[in-house]
Each structure stands twice: as structure tokens, then as C-alpha cells.
Image (cartoon, rainbow, N blue to C red):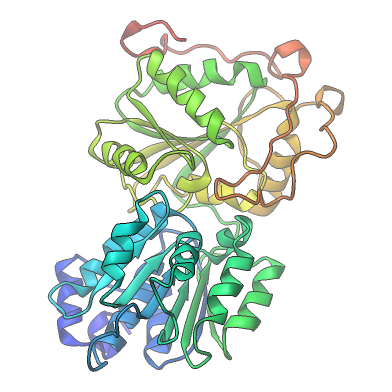
Length: 433
């Protein structure tokens, strides 16, 4: 099948896709949509940025257009679960586009917003509901929504939901949905627990797979700096100063750390903002909109931004702190080099992050080119305190868990010495904080 017209989709939907600039199906769409239109359960394995939303959204809308009548009060016909508010927002924008000029109604409910307006909007029922698990359970507890008439269930970025500790929430929600339903599960990776979910939630699913797990985007140029923890901020300011005005996404592990780093960058003269779990939804939305418009050029974020952000002009991704789940590195750097453009991913590695670096390189099947410093020796790597760090997935929606606090090693100096400064680095000649 070469285009959407050959997939037996409603002509109105095909026309709408064309208006949105979606003319040729991506590989995951070519494989998933025909099976989904036939009512089969689908398990899709694909990285972010491969067109997964349309892979489940197009057949979802196509089948709902054939349904008669309107949803009963407080009921949902099709439920799409996403792990983060940002991803839910991205999905919602796409579904609204597909549903434009049709009788279908789509709503979104996520945390960080006043729950009362959401309760009000759900009173009349909805065809499509995009939700984060926690907020949906709050609404279910208040009897503001029912799932007994839900015939479509989509789990997007299911592996990230596992990393965030949503497995119990998923079980509760799934138990409220009729067994006679169509379920689609999409994931970028396939951890062992994912097989349990697939076996529990899906019925004889068709498995479709594109982009092997662990494969970074082809057009991303990667580089690595071995540097002491205490020196990271100075190096980041230096590197950001070499491309002032170009969009850069900086990833950290903790909410507090990201907020602190953002304030340092603002003091150093950069147009910076932050998004993490302690921000309200309004604050997160304003930061992302500012980043998209160019008013904000540096966005500091936890892994809530590792998936679901589709901003074509992000030129640089900085792993200020390496993730302790190696697949998250792939997702993070996937925020650049989108829509066929080039991009650069720069990683910082302190002594206590050598384990994370090894896991990342093992997952990718290749080493990240070293730009400065040298690999830390075992004698320079601080012992990680016992009883901290939690499980590998991080457990909470910002991912990462409690990061062990270690010293900079080597008396606070980076392995192999500081890199040579290039061109002064500070925006506007201002002094760094």
C-alpha cells in the first residue's frame, strides 16, 4: 500500500489527512493501520517520531465514524492512555485534527489542571478520551466517568508507563473495560514485564516493528565529555554560548536539579525555562509554547520531555545528567534531528555515571565519540550509598529515581583535563553564574 487512499479509509478522513500534510504512510502506519481496521489487537514496537499516533489514531477515528448514535453520559468509547501530560497533549492535537469536521468528540484529562472543569466536560460522554493514568483514576473514583462501554483501548509509550510505576494503575483501569474490545499497545522497547502486559491485555495481537530498539536517529551527531560533576554547569554554559539563539534541550534527572540549573542559565543570560513534575500544567504548556516560538531557546527538563515533544527545530540535546534507564538516552536524543533535519547530542559523564554510560553504549551497540576528557578509572568512581537509588526505573513520573550523590572525583577535575574554551562562550559577553 503506497498511500492512505488504498487503506479503505473514509474519504473524509483521507481528505483531512491530506489537509494536515499527511500524505504518505510511514512504515509503522503501513503495517499497523490495515490490521487495526480489521479489528485486530496490535502490538507496535517503534521509536518516538515514527508516526505512531496516526498508526492508532487513524483506524480509531475511521471505526468510530461507522458507529451510530452518541456516547451515553459519562461514558467513553475509545480510551488512549499516555504516561505524561506532554505526550497526552501531543496525541490530543493529532486526534483533534483527524476528527475535525466530523461528529466525533475528543477530550483530554491530565493532572496539573483543575479537575472540576474536566468533570463537567465528561458529563455528556465522549467518543475519544486521552488521559494520564493518575488523573483518570481520580475521575473514576469520583464517578465522573465510566469505562463499561469502552470498546477501544490504546496504551501509548507503554514501556515508559512501566518505568514510571503505572503498572498497578493500568491493571485497575483495564479491569473496568469490557473484555470484548480492541486493544493497541505501542512501545519503544520491549522489557520482560511488557510481555506480561501484552498477554494480559491483548488478544492474539499482530506484532508490527520498525526501527530496532536501541537505534539512535541516523542524523544525530553524538559526542561525550568526561567531566567532574562540579564542572558540568560551566561546560554547559560554554557550549550553549557557542550557539546562542538555537534551540537546545537540556536533560537532568531531578525536578529540583533542573529548576536550579534553569535559574543559573537565566542568570548567565540565556532565555531559559524548565519543565518537570513540580510545574503546573499551565507552566509546562507556556514553557513549551515559548520553546516552540523561539522566545525560549534553552529548555531544561526531566524525562517528562523525553517523549511526546515534536519540535522540528531542536538543534541540540544535552544530557547534563545521564539517565539510569539506558533506553531513555535514545528517547532524549530523539528530540533532535527530527523531520529530516540534522542535530547534535552532547553527553556529560561524571565519575559516578560510568555505569550508566556503559549501559547506554551497550544498548546502542556502539560507543559515543569522546570530545574531551578520558574515561574515569575505578579508583576515581565514588561508592554509591546503600539504600538509595531505588529501582532502575525511577518509579515516579519524572523518572530517574534518587540519584546517588557522589563527589567529582580526581579532586574535582574532569578526566583528562578541561576542554579548551572556544570563542568565549557567554551570550552577550555576560558573566556566567
